Structures are given as structure tokens and as C-alpha cells.
Image (cartoon, rainbow, N blue to C red; front, top):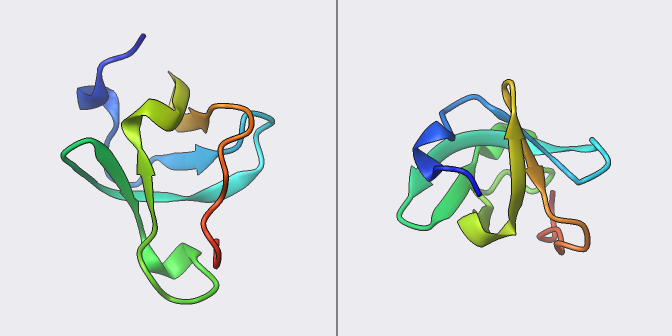
Length: 72
């Protein structure tokens, strides 16, 4: 398990295989808010902290099978 305090602004968010999903804008409660500039629809998208598999260097890896929001 990891500490959500380790998730910082500008960290890369990827799938479990390393495919780029977005960039952390903020941690809001138990959710990770992604920047709008990384989304195809220009909107903020969110992932639950529970969807995170691990944090390595400056990258947040999502658990395998985590559904990606439309527009990411």
C-alpha cells in the first residue's frame, strides 16, 4: 500500500502497462484530479485513490482493468 500524500501535482498517470492516461492536477479527498490539458474533451477527469496500483518515481500506475473515463 502507498500513502496518498506521495501523489503530487504534475505526476504522470498511466495504465498498469505504462500507457499515458494523464497528469495529476490535484488530489481532492480520495480522488485524483487530472489536468484538462491532457484530455481530448478539455475537461477534468478523476480517478479514485483506490484505483492506484503503485507509485514509482514520478509516475502513478492504475490497477489493471481500471476503466478510463471517456475523453481521456
